[in-house]
Image 1 (cartoon, rainbow, N blue to C red):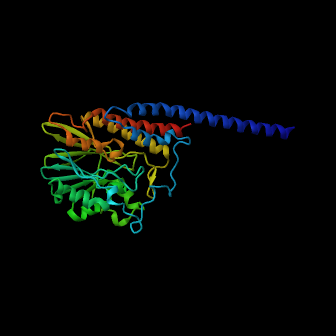
Image 2 (image 1 turned 60 degrees about the horizontal axis):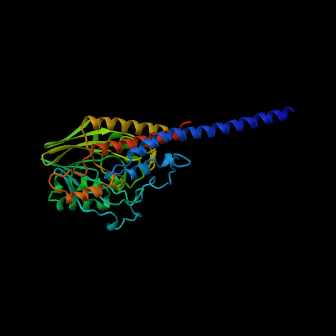
Image 3 (image 1 turned 180 degrees about the vertical axis):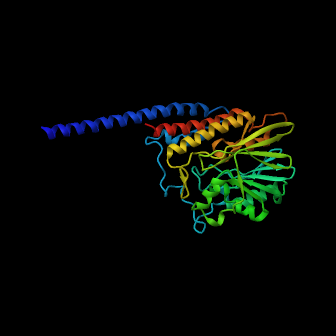
Length: 358
């Protein structure tokens, strides 16, 4: 009888534990849904859809299992070996360079062989100043000469005038082309201290890592001639992702562009663990987004300058510039679009945090 009671008691404990776990899971899904609804509400406006962003960043929170810690062998976690990787055909990445503002050029690609989704593309922005050019990111090594060097020449600019390169973060799609720029033009390379460290530790090809140079700090001003860019440390995608405010000129109009330095929150990449767990990762990325959203608003930022054109249909907007008539609004200038982008990033991240909370 005593053994029976003990067995019955244990069974009841297991049942209660199971019921509690189900309740917690349902509770976390319900809590996550509040954030998912907010993100979805921000995902669409006619002419400015951000549905690709919503479906990508919110996917882990919407999945049945919720956010799962990546394994070292998962795609994107192990850097491709330089000797064995396959460089994608030119047709899969090449895009024509474009003048987007009077002082800003886009030198990016329409595809990215190593990203998920592979069609996300990569942006390199070139800011023209009275004393030279500032690049924001460089894309990959295999495309740097054609997209940056040849791209600037096509636009009537001199690539030898590249004075600074700001690297948003320590992933190959941002920096693999930086060593080429550093070696060819002796440009100064700027990245945050924590990301310089993460890059040094990563299992990405050593041959593609630029020599450590300038260290970005929060609120740092990068001034070249008549133009000043402001850098902010916004950790969460990497240990110390950089987001940048860029003054823009469009005829007699002045605007402020915002480069948000990442997309998904990242726990570990390329053999380097950024944070101790998902909770710390999500809280860090969410706080960075909220802070930068406030910074951008105070600065009067009204233009989102994408790092991956897939997420905000930037290539279509850049192409539309060819058809813009005098007096027409600029396709990229839209304060609501910038605010919605950051809102989706934050709400999707908060939804993931809710899914792991019990």
